[in-house]
Image (tube, rainbow, N blue to C red; front, side, top):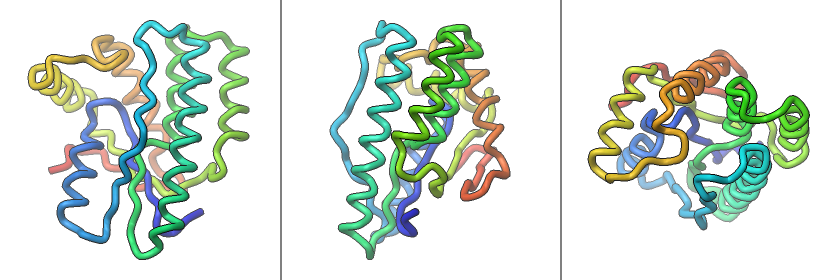
Length: 179
């Protein structure tokens, strides 16, 4: 575990990106690396989507760790980590989008794919109503919706699953809107 590497994680629309940008503005010792974007097509089949997402996050986390090694005097903030993969495995399974076999395989893949299975993380999960408000604001401003955001049952389950990380080791859990 790297002492200068932290991850921001939580449901879509929770305020992760805004919070990270504000932290970086407030402290010149914070670095948020810009990584190559690995977005998937909206209609990627769910079983395949899970596996690709885990692989993509693992590669990104490796790149964040490399950045932390190269910048020991900086605080590196990564976007999402193993906790996201574990959460979304459970969410996809609870929604019935993936089979039990894919769920079990995805959990094992997380164990193998992530060098650090217990990283330092800040989970931002301000609650369903705040997340809905943030999503509606994003849709209004950008005229775009990210995958799954329009499915409010999906958003609700996502908020609930991320709440299960509250109190875990190496996790700072924020359950209110971050100013």
